[in-house]
Length: 531
Image (cartoon, rainbow, N blue to C red; front, side, top):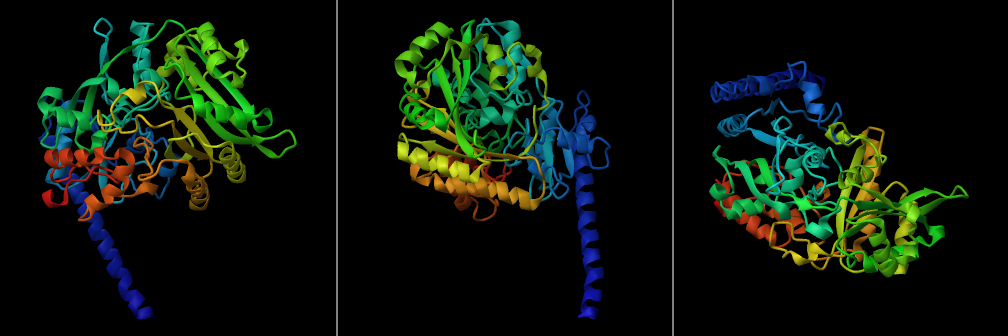
């Protein structure tokens, strides 16, 4: 046994060195290709970072928004291309195919599963953060926004030009435009204006052949796919042209919490029956979580977080008519501007300077796990009592319910790849956050979310059990992009896209038959069309 081990060790060392040598050689060849494809007017050399570069780690870590994927054991890319120009994207695509390399595309790094900057195979990252220009046309009520911009930057640039315009997108200002828009993009104006993708009218994309296309040249099928189907499956989205929406000069926000002792179950029950039917100018998010009670035992708390596109007097009229059970008081309501409402929803104090939206540094960074569900029918009070009991038992998992209805129910399910429209009462986000690293701790918190997700089965959608693509969840299935790619893709694909998955696959097969643009939950090609 000792002789065998002594023989194997040198062999393993040789194998490791040969493997490392091949990786270094491939990296050098790839860099050489990038440089050869670089335009003299826009040299790519300044955009290339290898592990030998002193800034490599800081560039990689700058947009890691989930600490689960910022550990010493997390596989790192062998190279990062921080594109400074369209031609850098084109070079990366052409050279990656030539050298058969896996490319990950990162915009803001908020992918819950780190799919935009982590892989199980050797890979490089095409980082879009430098491509962040925003061109606002207030008169035309449109804007061109590059994929590397953040939502906060978009909101601030709109605010600079107008106090009566906004855009329906997420409430976290450090989220990148590229992933948020291409995966659907929702926010607290969706009951009034729909999703981000419902308000996109053009785009620029570099396809698998390295061509820079717009809506006209890419065609309506591909334009449809990158508005909710995930741009990273079809190409590299460089920019989107968005349609600005009108907002009043004064909006009203409130944040009211009720514990179980304050009849939270009755109030939550009523919320379920009215939230999707309220005035479309009113969006009330419901968050269920656990806190310490007065007797030091854990209790449940329901938090009602709202935006109303109007003044407090109008809001009171709506609430008194449709949802008096909440007991909303005038002192709970804050009249402010739309841009300030974004800060309120991000837990900044009202009055905080608006330019904080330009910061790319998140308020907090944690280890986290997220999952999603859709509720079709109100949950009974008995069901709510069971859910609260389970939440208190698990303690560290929260549920956020985002109401649908309004414009969301009017847009057809096939208008864009995002299919969750009429018939949905609310979307649920499961969330667990923790501050300690290590595999054992991570497994503990992830399993808490899985236990709650399993417990919620009777209360949510079925056949399929639907999920929101932008709440990426690898528990739903992983694509290894091999011979079984289509079968693996169907597992999560129908949960995210329902019947729209079939059209996405057809478009993918047409525009990227070799499946170059791939990741752990990308859209697969039809099996008989693969190269």
